[in-house]
Structure formats: C-alpha cells, structure tokens
Image (tube, rainbow, N blue to C red; front, top):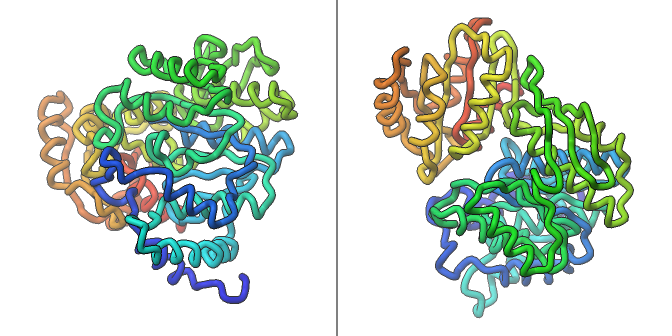
Length: 459
C-alpha cells in the first residue's frame, strides 16, 4: 500500500457518504438530474482514463453479468490482458474490478481512492456545480483508472442501469452488446418494453458493431432502428448466430452447438459451467462478440473460445454452493430472471431429486415481488420471507408473506409460509442444519444473495 493510503474504513466512509442510487428507491432518472456531464468532468480531471480504452460495452435487463463474464474469460484465454467492471458487488466492493479473473487487491483499491478523492473534493467545492459526484460515478471512474494503470489490452464494461444515461456510457467500445430486454427498473426506464429498449440502445455508438440477444417483438425493432440510425452493423441472435441443439447435463450445465457464418463458426459440442438453458443463449451472444472482435483484427483462437467458455465463473448465477444438502444461490431480482432460475432448478439433477425444497426469498421494494413469487412458490414446500441486513430498500418480510400466503392458498400442496427478518439467523437455523436430501434456494435480491453467499464461503 502506498504511503498515505487510507484505511479501508476511511475509504468506505468517503464512498458511502455519496449518493448511492443502488441503495435508494427514488432515482431521478427522468428529472434531468442524471446526465453524463458530471461524469465527463470527473474523468477529464482524472486524465480521461476512458479515452483510448479498448472495450466491450454490455447492457441488458437479464444475462449481462453472465455474458460479460463469458466474454472476459474468452478474451483472457486468447492471451489478452482483460479487465472486467461489473456492478453491484456481492460481498466486497473490489469484486467490481477484475483483471484476468483476479479481483482488484485491497491495497490497489485504496491507492485508487487516494488518487480520486482530491478530484472529487475539488468538484464538491465548486459553487457552480449543482450536484456532487455520486457513488456509481466514482466507482466507475475507479475502474477505468484501474484498467489504465494496469495497462489492460481490453476491458469488458457492464452497464449499471439502463444505458443511455449510465456512467459507463462515455466509453468508445469496439463492440456494443445488448443481451435481453424485459421489465426491471420500471420506475426509471418505464413500463413499456419499447421504452426500456430505447434506453438500453443508448449505448450504441456511430459505426460500432452491435451484438444483440433481444428477441422480444416489441423491443427488437427498437434496437434495430437505433443501430440503423447510428450506421452500426447489427448481429442478431437467431438471425446471424444462434445456440442450437441445447441439451442439459445432469448437473444442469448446458451443452450446445454454435451456429454462425462468422470467422469462428460453426462450433459443435460447447459446454458452459453456468447452469441453465438460458446460459447457452448468453454464451451464443458472447461468442458472437468474439467473432466481431476477430473481424476487427483481434486474435481470437477457436480453442480460446472453448476454453474460456468452459472456465467461466459468475458467482450467484444459479450457483450450486453445496450438495447434500443442495444449496443454490441466485441473484435473480426480476420476473425474467426468476423464470430462468425455475427452469434451471428443474433441469439440475441435484435440485430436482430433493425430497424437501425450501425457498429463502427477499426482495427490494421497487421490484415486482408478486410476479417473482407467483413463478417460484409452486416449486417449493417451505417459503421463508426475509431481508438482507444491508439492503435499505428491502421489502418487509411481513409484506412479502401476505403475497406468498395468497399464492400458497391456491396450490394443491399448500406450502408453508414463514417470516424471519434476519438472513444471518436463517443461515444458522435453516441452511446449516439442513438434511442431505433437502434443497435450499436463496434468491430475490443481490443483497440477500451476497449476504448468504458470504456466510457460506466462510464455512
């Protein structure tokens, strides 16, 4: 650690004192307060670390984290020094920044704070500045600065919210990626899929190739229209490329063939370690990105695509943490992600053969908890509604239980519904003493998934 680096507590105080839209309900997305001007000023004062950064920019409602991880793993397997910026984190803020799969060391993170803090304080002191840099703006700047320091060859940058007004949207990518479009963050992005697609499509830059996994008939034309308006070549799943003959192994991991007329296709017998049918579709998007990069002059060996995909890790995405008892952690927090989770659990042998199934569910107040519960409750015998100790937006377990009991009352197997406001207590009273034949699934919130996952990792 460099001389003068702050303690972890001091660094966190600096960050947590900022406005953090990951932790509040009301985000002024449509008020005009969210603009890129402040982020542009912050980066300029830091020496414009985003300028000249070769990168892949990934947006989407569902699958962007998994797809970003696949892309980064394939790039690393290709021999490229690869950065990856994702959000939010599960346990430690350093998880947002990785190079070749290695999370940013704490010492390096604290050194980055030393460099960024005086610039932020300079902006804070400007009497002509209406609003101060936010938590996400600062953490994004930290990531871009880190990648410049570490001289990465290329970075994979995941959008935080939406796309058009996201703090990451100052990068000039080699490829723009939009994974899927469904309902989430509707307070900010609107309730219509076309409107949500329009915000996501805001990452499309003039002449920059776009890879899209969006198939929804309301959203896909919006992506295509924006790509055409920006003269950006568009590769669309199930048109230019696809995941074919998807079959799931006994552990739920997909095997599939990749169809494409591009420089890397077709590829037969691919395997993803990430569980679920949907992960084959995400993988097809990731491989298509590799094809675009290959066409742009990057050296992407076919073997690196296979190896990188097979080595992909993405925590809390239908993550099988234990077997006998089976414990699954999934950060699904919208209806589309819960639907994918349910399908993955049905396909996973260890989950399907469980004799008793317990759901630990918690959600944020701004999410469609009812829609998620309607999908997931029929597949469980015991429902425990809870909340993370670190989620200021958490829906009250009692409120969730009202929804759950109404759903359970209509089911023939009458699942038991309980509440416990302490996720940590549930770890000790439900997960730890579980019998070998049980299956426990933790889902509904990034916050809840992160808290339980951290407790499991310590044991």
